[in-house]
Image (cartoon, rainbow, N blue to C red; front, side, top):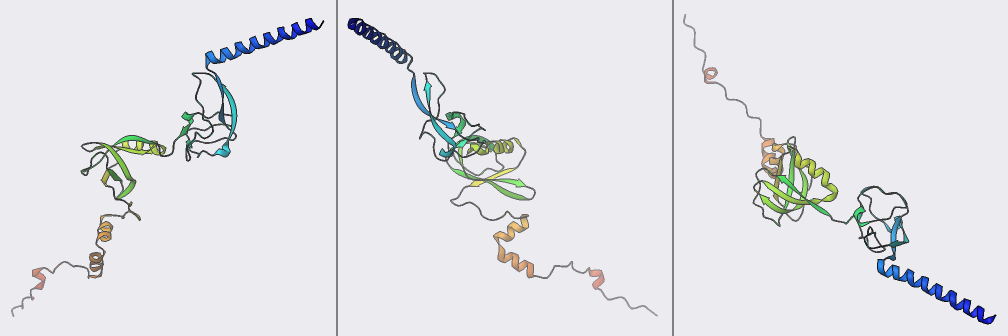
Length: 226
């Protein structure tokens, strides 16, 4: 009786070891593994900044060729969601935008300044009678005549595409360390006065200039003859 029990125990042990061997062999052959991934706890919108409070860490069985997922510590600080997601969604790198991500866009610049690739420019758009600063210290990656290829934030891609496709008049100057401050002048006279305030003050205090009297009105009236 004891022999039968020992035999049965040995038999089942061999079977269990064989099954485990098959499972381990299949895993080694397939290369599958279990990893920790990030799963959303709350709904997020496109443009929201990633926060560790938005996610849980859950185990996931993956195999070679499976979709890549974000893992704990893999998301850079300041990353943003590129599209709206729902609770329970697993995060993949394609759904997050790294902070500072940029795209190239080509703009037509009127009277372009002498700029080379690697320099930065300030870009102004003509709005009614004013020039509005729309880009400060924008890196230039290529110049071909009045066509400037620049790097802009990927978050502003749609706005820049709209500007590039429009007939808006764009001007540019070589960028300086600090961007222009204050509101744009209302018109060219205000711009001149902003650059030369002392001359404008002098002109403002001067009496208005009137047209000179004609020579005919300056002559005395002739004396009638009796």
